[in-house]
Length: 256
Image 1 (cartoon, one colour):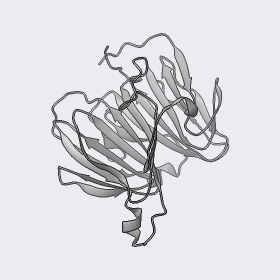
Image 2 (cartoon, rainbow, N blue to C red; image 1 turned 60 degrees about the vertical axis):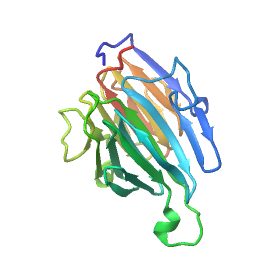
Image 3 (cartoon, rainbow, N blue to C red; image 1 turned 30 degrees about the vertical axis):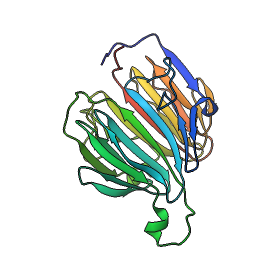
């Protein structure tokens, strides 16, 4: 990792510019190179390598597959996602519940939309919509781990709430812990007219998960839009309509 920032820059990436994977059960939009989609000029920003905006049909999902040496944070906006992994953890992730999986030396996991089975209904009607984000850990070869935490009540304040962090300034009682001391994910749910100020950090990534907002010095942003900040921060974000934003604060980047 490298803590040196470049010249100040604000890079707006609109929703329609994202790479996409669309198959029968999955509609996935990738902010960065992912899977078979590779662009050498778009591999990461700061410490963030993956920002996948996924919609999964009921009764479908990601079958058991491996990961290693990655901090994976999942945030659900709609529906519920069933998680199972090789460390024995299982649970249901829903809006307002933050989840972190440390892949470490290696982990197998599956994530499925089992809303039909959980509800006992005979029909499959409810998609699940979530964002999955990956950041690199401080060190390789750590013991795999899992954590989840209910954040919903804190989000009622309308402020920018830390929900996943490896930074000393964030209390582990109020945010799930990730194994990177230079990174933190903040979330805000905003009503029209409500504003938050972005952190001041060498690298920021703002993602509009739903709704629309106005960014100071840039203008309107819609659902699926993202902004990459380098060596500049502190801008104000104001909701134009009910909105949910995800903000990664990063004090280092991946060394080339």
